[in-house]
Image: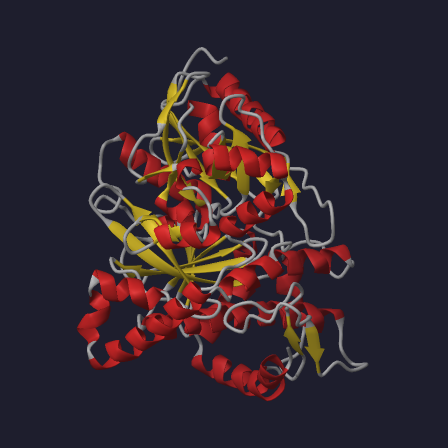
Length: 511
């Protein structure tokens, strides 16, 4: 291992398709970055798995490589894809099954079955009544009890929920079910699995827990009701810890695992901690997270409440929506030979005329928030023999920006909170044309941070405060902005007229 240290923080980013190890100086300078693609496993159509041992082999390989180059860090922070589920034997440490990832849809029927459970249906009914009463008595939803009941109004189990993954495993693997019931098994999302291997501590933080479908976001605990409904023993669940608590020592490097935080929450932390902060991470898809402050707000169809950050003294909440295919839509253009890199987007905007009426609904993996129509496919409107390659590229980028603006509007409508501006990170944010269109359609300033890897950098900012024993919320500091884009109202009005005429009726009518 390395024999010297530069005084740096190492961030481990365990993503869906890549695992990254990123080293930052204490001042925030990027020192080194290593990454390796994971090998997804698709046993059946709609199934998506990962090998837990391969994940750890990759993690150790990347960490060893950076430690050899830079020496031991001052500490390591962990950020990760949410909801990916692991179950392993407590004594041997061996996985009892491959990880089921958040992309897996095998639990669709199971989720529908449990969403129709009598207790869940009663909870939804009471939640909707409470929500209606809170319009007359606003103070009702400001109480913890009122907020809790209101969050039940639109609760459904989803295929992304770890609870559904775990229940499916218990229903289909007798050995695993026996280990769970006997208490010989441990359950966790991918942060828990990595953290347990690194430190021996069986923990998860509140941001990851809030995406499992087993968590009570108002009372900040594992839900007794959901555990009972699903018949999942709570003794296999990890301990819940705040984001400002050091997890343990990584003996292999004799350094602390400083903190863990889910990837989207890490990006939101980069953007700010004030109520009304809106972050968009444009990666494989786009995740849009709105900071709603210190009180959990109920979501609605396609808009989900979660914990944004939890420290020893404070908690902030968010509402989240998503657009399924963004980076993958751009990659599709590359795959079919229509473009080579992001510079082709700006060329397309220059070459495509203003009189082009092409409209592109980019639902290449279904239509997500706020419509939630997974079976609806990507569609091009007004395609003619005069349509050019540049027209198609431009129409797709405009369609992606429009979809992100629709989710922005939905987040504001559900929360009653107006976003101050939009911080946009992730690969697709490299495109000025995309960000300008987003600003135009959302009617808000859009800013691109210097550091587009929002999850690693947000995790670094959090870890630095924890390492220096500062409150991560009170001591948050703004990040450097590379470029900002101002909205053009006339552009928005012209585009809206065409979109409302051609695309919106299709989205509302099609299943």
